[in-house]
Amino acid sequence: FREGLCDSSEGRLKYPQPSITHGRTDVVSVTPWLAPVVWEGTFYPVLLDSIYQKRNITVAATVFAVGKYIRFLKDFLETAEQHFFVGFKVKVYVFTDQPNEVPKVKMAAGRELVVRSVPNSKRWQDISARRMEIIQTLIEEMLKNDVDYIFCLDVDSKFHSRWGTESLGELVAVIHPGYYKDDRSKFPYERRPASRAYVAPGEGDFYYCGGAFGGVLAEVHQLAQTCRKNFEDDAKEGIEAAWQEESHLNRYMWLNKPSKVLSPEYLWQDFKARNSEVRVIRFSGVIKNYNEIRPN
Ligand code: UD2
Image (tube, rainbow, N blue to C red; front, side, top):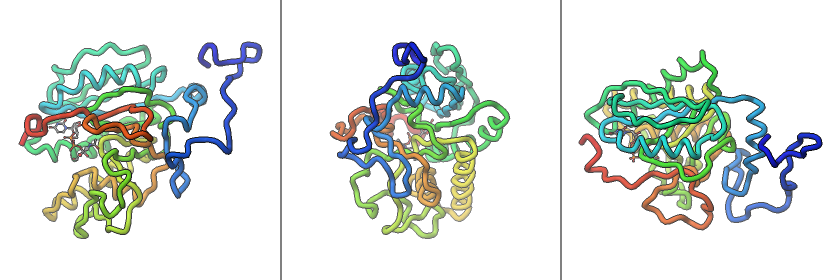
């Protein structure tokens, strides 16, 4: 337990009394399938950390920095050091076509950076979509190691505040900041029935981000394998879903409900003003000039 928060006579953790009648009323903090939706004010960080510290967990993160996206890596890694699972064992896997350009970021004890080479692609859509295949293969290799949880994150983003043990679950999805107040008929799901990512206008739960998802290795492996296969089978028939692997992820999360849902605090976008229910921005996508950074 962290110093100052335990009862020195008995070594037990002290924290405010949980209430069963008072809590946040401006947001929904549980889905209709009873998965928690994580918002600031719905959890006690120190209490959660104490639970997971006893389990001695290791958390992996994957991030792809291919082509010009390498420019985002330094801020991503430096801010991850400040906010992502601080005090826990963390392994950050960087996949890049320029391993020599990976910035040297000082990491705390117990935290490790692993750099892997991947080829570049002519189309940005392929770089983004091929992540599923690489994540699938990485998890197969990790299963032999001591990694418990994995998060797969976009590199063109920064951490601004705590992202920690409150986010852990079997299968974890993040609500996209752009659509969470919209009717589901407006979500940018893949709408062509011929695609394996198809979701009909009267169906679906939320619109989730492709830029952040995670969970335990077995669950994320199943997700990556399914999205990869559906993406490739679509491609054989000349179809590419509206938002590539994000569309396939959304179909997957509809059919296989996430056990924990992270609010848009966990992936905001810098070009959007903060909405009042978002009390803390923990992670956000930076503003980028698509024409300038994408290969085509
Ligand atoms: C959205 C999703 C993204 C993905 C994409 C659809 C969010 C915040 N972002 O963002 O995850 O689902 O739609 O394909 O939910 N990359 C490179 N080099 C490149 C291109 C991409 O390394 O030349 C990597 C990089 O890690 C980047 C990620 O792929 O963060 C996603 O690409 P993007 O940021 O261009 O996708 P975007 O902004 O359309």
